[in-house]
Image (cartoon, rainbow, N blue to C red; front, side, top):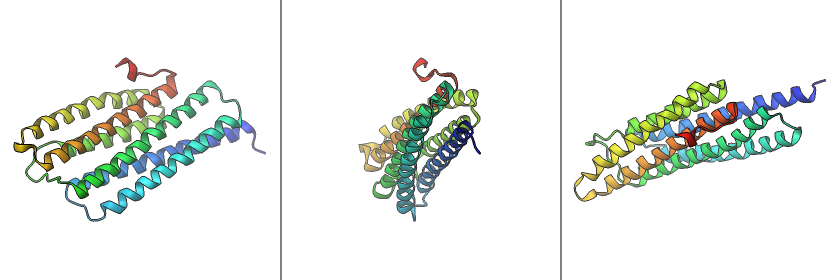
Length: 215
């Protein structure tokens, strides 16, 4: 017969799998917006909307599992940090899903012509995907170095955002396309912030300390 601690550890393992699955869904939602920026808009509406609903559902399921784990038995300090970090991580991932949905809507309904533009918007978007991917790898492997490297990469996202704003501000009359592209870039910048938050919660789950406040 399985003992309580063994059962508890199995539940923690399942929690990790659910978090990785949610992270993969968030990553896919960003990648869809990148394809849309490159001109592939055909099925964007339902794909992003469907993923956003899926991510929200995953958040509720993971929150429920976390609460059950907290109530199941007195967690040791390391378990408590993992579970509390998971609760924070899913909140950031849910925000990523929503912001990817907002980007998708803007691409479909706004003016986002990149044909004659040299702004590094796709590079910025791809950087946020890498940040999210690495933050989840760091969580799965309990890799402090990778988590710290991921946090540092947010500076690159911020730098690209400022570059995009500077370039678009030079456009005559600040047309609708420029305004929409700045807003989309701001959404990607926020996604980068959420990926940085996830990496910081990974660090907290391992060490019991936050590093973002020290930056």
